[in-house]
Image (tube, helix red, strand yellow):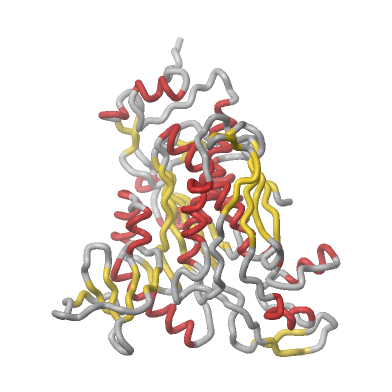
Length: 434
């Protein structure tokens, strides 16, 4: 199906090389200020053609809100948003009428429906995610205004290149800003010299080694945005992606997402636990192959005495509730949010569309070779953060609305003050024990 959510419902529509793509969002709270500008920021971060290490397809992905708002505010009625496709090249996919592309969904769509889109994968294309990103930006604005929730995603590994464990743990704990994630980028200077300059103006070569800026040298050339906030690792990632681009190949990696300042008590045991809902959301995205939360698979190497997050009294704005000394569980216990940041990671496979000739078979069973034309990403990781942030926001807002529907279960955010909690609804209550 093309609908996700229970009370906050998102339905996406459109094909990769059709007239347009978009979404219909139902369950949006009324009287929230909303314009296209609130949505466009995330769509711009997602769009193709941002860097020489992404697809060259030129789309501005300009969103139009067709319904559900008036005078810049939501009406509480369904919101329809659409982005028109501008740079279509259906002829690039003519060969897929004869042979299915390895790693793509043409064959399975044909088996399921008896027909398939003639170009670009149709609904299975990552272009479908535009609707998710638009709906996610809407959900994120509500969560930020109501609870101060922040959702940030970054690239933590590509192929065998990863942020060092200690540095990765530190990033998860402090959670970098989106500006920091977006700013770090490698800059190719001249024909041979390759340097990376981070937001602080520090330089690295593409092996991750710090270098001194040469006096009088002006850095010019294409910026390679990896969306990895660790400069030395970002440099190595950029170098590897450029190598793969030249080799007409691709690779995958892992993206880390942190959701912080969110209410405790979200999640619907037993089957709709917060991590189960997030896993479904993330694994519904194209190219996703793995999901973990908190320590994830790493907890299998730990002892219970190491993995348990010990409770401690909270202080400051958190006073009156419990905190934990660590966050190995990733912000959830028993499938319910604790108020600690949710920390999750998603594995993204190598892009299936590569320019190399690949052995395959025609639909009638004859051996064949296939060269995929078109404009494709050697690594899609740098464009994934808005997708993962969007699905995280959609999932959390749906769980918020489900929890708010319980009139005797007030929502409160451990990071908010008492006055802010009053504005958010009823004041937090404590259960009295006999």
